[in-house]
Every structure is written in structure tokens, then in C-alpha cells.
Length: 256
Length: 151
Image 1 (cartoon, each protein chain N blue to C red):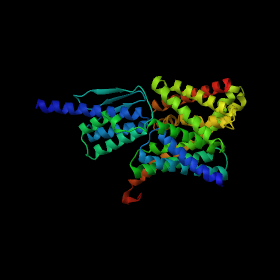
Image 2 (cartoon, rainbow over the protein chains, first blue to last red):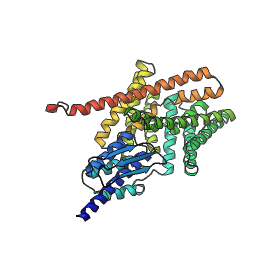
Image 3 (cartoon, rainbow over the protein chains, first blue to last red):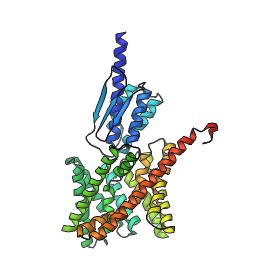
Image 4 (spheres, helix red, strand yellow):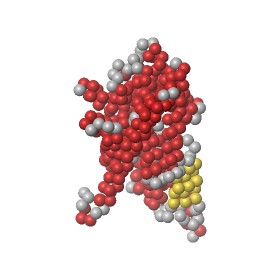
């Protein structure tokens, strides 16, 4: 009798742990809050915790199982990046669990090893992507076809600087600021040496990969779905990013 | 006309490029580019017929919201994968840059003009998203009507 009770307790602990882990991965990868809540509640319901409650914010998750023996679990979230493939993977795993294709042990195992399961694009491909965004958007926004290639290169340099500083400094706003300085400086130098035509257009293009598009979208969505903690918090995140980019460009314009 | 075709191709590749940056799954990349192109086409048509700043961005945002939800249902992936790259060609990058530049140069009057444009455009896109979400919620409600009316 006591044995089954402990086993049930262990199982409930495991479910709570899995839920918090899933939510943590989703928030760290840049998912919106309503999806996080939805996924966690779905996992809990499928695992048999009918009265589970979850409170998720941008910096932490609190979850209780709604059963007497098991308390609550807290998961803290220190850093956030953008990795849409992880969001998709957690979603996929949650669907597979709902369809009973995997059990809770496999689910938790996959979540713990998600870094091995999800492949990142290699750095050269990401840099190429940044170049693509920069170069093409100069044509779209400013009708400026001749500056395509130089913007492509400036955008790639800006992204590479951002990427490496992010690894070493780990303060996102600072690396954004320095990347913006590099983009502005390169654009102005290129125009001075006759490689580019319009410095303004090149800077606009080169900044586009760094623009905080996802935090802004998520801020609007979170605020609209009634999450008044995470919506404004994300808005502030986006605002600080935008200010960092702006100061970077302003400094480049001033000195070069 | 030539420039228009080039721009269409450019928008497609900008969607894919942003997808590469935010690490979209491989099978979502192509669709993300198509979403971006569709929303930008809507934006382009409206800005060249009605003009103005609000309406084109509103309908662009609306298109992104609707298309990404439909594709998310078909592909069984979260809809956020498709609306982030779709947003890229609508972002008011030029105006935002001009705001910063004029602030830096001390032309506050011009800067505020650009800033109000940025706020207006971002607000319109957000409103488009809201309406798309509203339409989606109504669509889900209708599914539960009796006699299968929503199908």
C-alpha cells in the first residue's frame, strides 16, 4: 500500500519536473507565453494531474501539481535567445506524448538532451542568412540595387561581430551596441572609399538582422493574451535593444 | 516592372535569411519565405492603390497572422515559426534609422516626425496581428456550432 503511494508520488514529481523543463526550454528559445502555458497544461493533463496550476513569467516558472503529497516546483530562467527549432521540437514531443507514442520517461530524457537532438545551423550559414536579410532589404526598402553586395558584406560582418561578442561577453545589449558601431563604421568607410553609394541605405540594411523583431511580436502577443507581466517585460527588452542599436549607429556617425 | 520582380525575389530571400538567423527547422524555411512574400505583396498592392501608412501595414500584418495560422495547422508546427520571418519586410527600418540619425544630429523636429511614423507603422502591424488572432478565435468557436456548420 505504502509502496504504491510512493510510486505515485515519484511519478507526480517526475511529471512536474518534465513540465517545468519543457516550459523553461520554450521560454529560453523565445516562444510566446500563451503557448508555454498551453503546452505545460496539456502535458500535465495528459499525465493525469487534472488540477495542476502554472505561473510562468519571463524569468521563471512556478508550478504546482494540485495533489496533496507533491508540492510545487520552481524553474528559473536566466538567459533568453532565439532558437525556433527548439520551440518546434518541444511542441512535437508534446504532441507525441499526447498521442501516447512516447512515455513520460522518454519525454523527460529527450528534453534534457534537447541540445543534442536539435541541430543549429552552422555559423557560416547563419552569417550568410544575415547577409541575405541585409542585402535584400536594402533593395526592398530603399529601391537601391547597386548597394546590394556591399550591404550583404556589411550585414555579414555585423552579425559575425554580434555572434562572437555574445559568446564572450554574454550581455546581449552590449554586443548589439558594438555590432551597430561596426555596421555604421563599415558602411561609412565603404562609401568614403567609393565601394558603396549611399551610407544611410547600407546602415539600414546592415542593421536589419539585429533588429529585435521577435521580442516586439511576442510583447504584443503576450500583452494581448492578458499576460501583463511578460508583455511589458518583453517590450522593455525590445526597447533597450533598439536603444543600444541606435546609440551604436549614432556613435559611428559621430566618429567616422 | 523589372524592379518589382527583383523585389519579390528579394522579399522571399529575406524571409529565408531571417529564418536562418533564428534557427527555423529546415522544412519551415521555404514556407517562411512564401509567407513573407505574400504579406509583402498585400502591403505593396495597398500602398500603391490606397496609399497612406496605416492601411498597408495593417493588412500586411493581418495577412501574416492569417497565413501563418493556416500553415501552422497544415504543417503541425507552432505558428510563431512563420510569422516572425513574415514580419521582416514590413519592419519600419528606414524610418527608425532616420529617427536615430536626426536625434544624433540634433534635428529634434525631424526626428519626432520620423518617430511618429515608426510608432504609427508598428501600431498598425500590431493591430493587424490582433485582428488576425480575433478571426482565428472566432473560427475555432464556429467549429463547435451544431450540425457541423463551421466546416
